[in-house]
Each structure stands twice: as C-alpha cells, then as structure tokens.
Image (cartoon, rainbow, N blue to C red; front, side):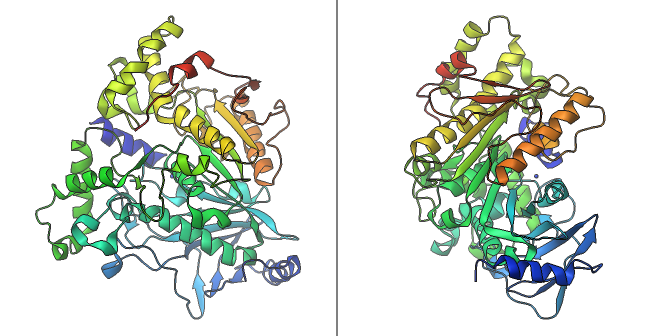
Length: 508
C-alpha cells in the first residue's frame, strides 16, 4: 500500500443577523418541552431530536446541491422550503474514496444545542479534517460541547476534485478558482450561522471557528479572507498551519496532471463523468504526484489575493483570539513502519526534498541520542505541522491579532499501533472526550482538562481548567507553550534549538 493511500485512510478513520436574548428565550420556551423540537429559521422550519437534555438538528441544508449544472461551481445559498423539514438524520458525506454513504449533494450542517437556553450562548463551528480529500462532519461528537453550554455546529464542504481543483483551464472562466470551492462552502455555512443560529440559542457575535488538520488549514485561510472576517471572532487550530496553498500556476499544474488521467478533455464529457470516475482519476493523479496532498486551496485570485500568512501578517485577523497547537509526534501515523527509511519527497507537504535535507542534518546534532526513526518523525512533524502552526501564530501577532495561546500535546498513546507516540489526530480524543478505554485514568483526566480549556476559550476567557497550570498568552519572543501531559507544564521557548533549524526556511 502506498504512503498516500495509507495517509488518506488514516484521515478517514479519524473529520436580521442578531436576535435579542428575550426572543431567544421565548423561542426555546415554546419548543424545549416537546419530544421533537421545532425551530423556525429564515429558510423554513426544522424538526430535530430531543436527547439527554440537548436538541440536535442533523442534515440542515445551507447550500443548494452542487450537482448537475452546478457541479464544480461556487455554492449558492439554500432555497426556502415549505412545511417542516425533518432534521433527525445526517446527510451523506461529501464524495471521497474508501467511504460509505457519500454523495455530491452533501452541503449540510449539524447543530447541537442545550434544550434550555436562558441567554445567547457562544457558538463553535467545527471544520473537519481529512487532507482535503476525506472526512465528514459526523466524525466528531458535537454533543460533548453542547452539554458544556456551547452551541456546536459541524459543517460539510466539497472534497478532492469537487472542491479543491481549478477546472477553469478546461471548463472556462466561470470555474475560475474552483480550487477554493471547499473554502467557499465553509464561508457559506458561516453566513448561514450568522443568519440563523440565534434561533437555536446561539450568539452570532460570539462565533469560534476551528478544526483539525485540513480543517485547521481552512481556518487559517479563513483568517485571510476579507469576506469571512465579520463571520467569526475567535479561531482554534489543531495540527494545521497556513502553508498548504498553491498559487495559480501551481494549481494549474495539478489540473493538468488530473486531466492526464481522463480519456477526454471535452467539457461536456468531463461534466458528464460519474463521481466514481472522478474519484478514480483523483486517486491515480495523487499516486503519480511527486509530493503529498496535491489538491489544495489557491491564492492569487479574488478570494485569496495573497497566501494566508501574508494576509494574516497584514492584519486580516486583527483583534481576533487564537488557540493553536500540535501533537508532538504528528507524523508517526503517516510514516508508520517507514519511519526507519530516509524521508522521501512523497512524504513532504510543504517543501522540496532539497530544502528539507538542508535542515535535517541538524537533528542529529541537537538530538544525538534520539533514534533515527524518531528524528524522522520529529523533523517531518516540524515540516508538516509544528512550524506551519508556529508561523500562523507569529503572523497573527505581527498582524495585530488578539490574545493567542499555543500548546503541544506530549501525552502518548498507551496501546495500539502508535503506542508511545502523540500522533496526528490523537488530540481529538482528548478534546472531544472519546479516548479509548485502554487509556489510563491520567489520560482521561487530561481529556477533561483539555475539553474544559477549550470551553473556557470559546466562552471568551483564558483557556484554563482545574489541575492545569496558568496558561500564559503566547508572544513571539518567549513563546510560552502549554505542554499537555500527565503533569502539564507551561514552558518558555520550548525546543529552541530545533526551532532555530527552521529559521528563514522557504516553505513552498
């Protein structure tokens, strides 16, 4: 099995604008006592599910289905409906490889809210991960945040060739920047939140966006999109960064590689291809591509005139609060048993092999007693996640960003294939409180603490929890970082020698 295929499978395992407080209380008083809660949105009435003190609405349309003549085009707001729309079942996930219940008609969101709301609650909009080619908004447990007094929203977006490929070279100008369709989908979902979330008890003025992996990268991109600025006030980035964006020329090279997998370049033939045929071409192109993750967002156009970091440094997220961090051994789950082999270009997502090899020898000097495979994991983790996340934090502070907190998850798995590693996506089990039962009691205690810290941040406070040390705000000099572990600590200038290896590194 190829590294690229394996990586994708790992991702799949793992995913009036304001209403007064009085009107929100009135709306919920009318519905909280019923078995099937009804909520009236600007588009129509939804029937959800009452469960364990929560109201849950699944499969809520925020966009018109991007199918037929709308395939590969920017998403449009959903149309109103008559009557009551059943919102008790999840919609199909976006079309992707190696997944069941998938459809091109996937632009729906899910809402989890306390059944009784006395005042507007903060909102957390979760953007799932999956390398831009996989994942689903149903992969996380929104109930755990709603049970903590947060209105939780999980959103879908188009994936792979449907959401991150620029089709304009072959289909024409109407498809310009279609490599940003997935990003557009998320923005449309955030607009829906602004227009409707007050009906569910949420405060549209206190929206935190966040995600893990690809979701964290989309979060960084949103920080740099002008039209998205009014749609949120805080950001959470778990194992992301802002590097994975192509310029127009690079994006078109990916398009040409994709077209090489098709039997016809005629627009009518392309638009008539089945979703399965498009996925097959995507798989073949990805396998042949020399580096990792060729399908990416695109800069240089109207949506992202500049790359995300340049926009953030320029003040695009000025004043907004940020919680950002990574896991210590992210790349353990991508390298697997190949961690004992030299790093190849195919392993890299943000640089050339020559660039990486200009840094890598320094790891043996600063970590002389570290086994070769661990140095590989550590260096690739820095290239893929730690340094890109560090640079988002740096750009945010330099651009006048609000309070920022940085973390690293050092706690490691107690069992399984990655025993002893803090691997990519391991943090989700802590934040969403669904660690494996095999984890020790100390891990479950840490899970409660991390979840509580996230809740505190979403509430607008310093992230904190009983048992955690005081979490100092991050700055570009001392870089205070919460090291989450059995006994968590806040360290000044962590891994300083390693960080210096990446000074002025020219990420692609």
